[in-house]
Length: 98
Image 1 (cartoon, helix red, strand yellow):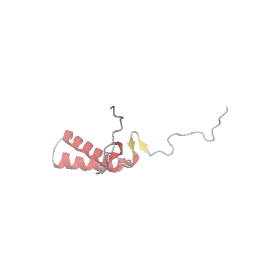
Image 2 (cartoon, one colour; image 1 turned 90 degrees about the vertical axis):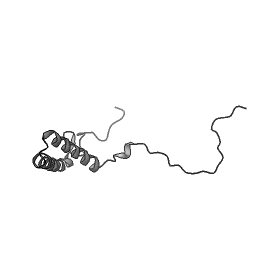
Image 3 (cartoon, helix red, strand yellow; image 1 turned 60 degrees about the vertical axis):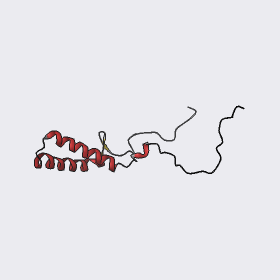
Image 4 (tube, one colour; image 1 turned 135 degrees about the vertical axis):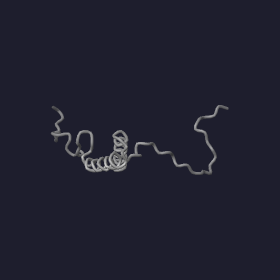
């Protein structure tokens, strides 16, 4: 053992965000409120049936998850370069063959 570690990983989940399965724990109560609201609104008040109610509920959950996530949603997209006017002559990067 030429190289010894100072720290040993005991629990990999330490320091991570709390989760309930694949779902973040801080999303459970808002999702419950969205689900109950959609069930009352779509199924009982509008008599829309279970399929539209479940679609509206899933849409509400996905929208809330996207808007309230702590990570940047648009951060995964590559930004376009900023264009500006320049007043220099064009110089080719390739050597011209004359």
